Length: 262
Length: 284
Image 1 (spheres, each protein chain N blue to C red):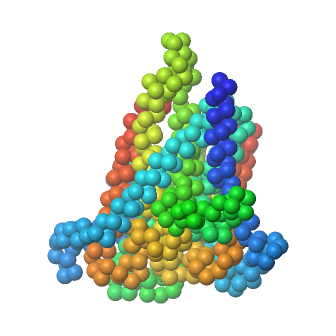
Image 2: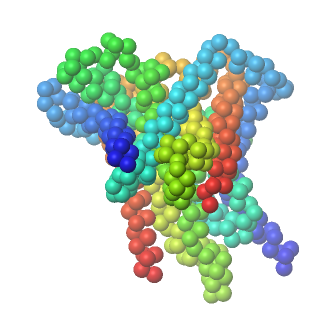
């Protein structure tokens, strides 16, 4: 028994070391920009870079649109499948998992060939079109997470009864979705949204191959040209991921609380 | 009534179907079909045959090796960590933070991850410098290079291990205490319990997760690209260069390259699903 505990502590310590060192290393490196002393120079330089602000806000806007469009597609579909087409569920679930199977680089390869200027839907011909394509591509990448989150959320409520109750009070489909179903799965949608946000902010391949000025390609470019700024960017990116995951924990805990009260 | 209701039920699936068709299925099919086509539209297998040239085969091989190495080591260490937290008698409060951190770290891939490892194990990285100034040990003069097979594997493990922890923890929780008790009543040692009872039950989950981790690292581009530029010729990076500038000088060979990736990740995921179904028999 004693030795088992010892081994567990050893495994944990080893894991902690492996995961802590790169984080510490990055933090330390990002503070090294001024010779001899620790300083925030790298962060100052990053934050002062207009390119940083442009690409970062571009990715934030992209993330927000992706979340809205993703939720708009996923929530009604997941609801509809649970309510009316339960035998479709395996099929829909399979399709939503495909973005984890097909590498993103292959999907975007298809976009570039399928929606080029000489095709019927020449999305890559204009800036707006390419932005739209990138956003829909992000929605595709986040589909597995969004769908899984919403579907799990729907499992905890009685979709059929809620729908009938709403219908007997005279509600139409849009009212049911917006005012009955959505509030009930809001926590699930939010956790899907935060994961989506974390994915979109740092995404590199899609944005790079579609030539859009997003945060991921900007980070890559900085990495190729600067010394200490990349580490500062990594710290910033990691903090964003942390915040997103923290928010997921927060909303889930919050929802457990309200459920318990009921 | 029935005839009026049916079309309506179907209409509810239109937005999703359209979205999936246009932005997931059709682009993928375009690549797949392109892999079997000549430049004037006829059917051919020559693109696939052309994959079997030394440079492309070499890049598939190194991709497969890296994915296999990160998947195997990720599984092993991830399993050890998950086992330590769930069954190892560690204090209960540790579990929450470990799971949360795994959630974060498994999503911390891509460009920033490459930066993190460069800042740690690069030529001027924290660990490199500390080892040199404390012990006079220069890892770079002893054959270590972050921009290599080993370095890339070490970096990928940062998201592979947490993914393993996330997936295998529920399976470890599913090991019923009664099994352990029954085994020890029958006189089994801890080792025997693991070898005869626990591991055979966990085996499908373990292999399945191995397949998933394999696919996970096989498709990854950003980390490798930011870490090594195009000096490391793994398949996704080769495909990236091909999409950018047709380096293979044959668009259809590019499709075939992408098709090969789908086949490999597809097979790995198929193995995952199949093994998962098998493992769930025990998890009820």
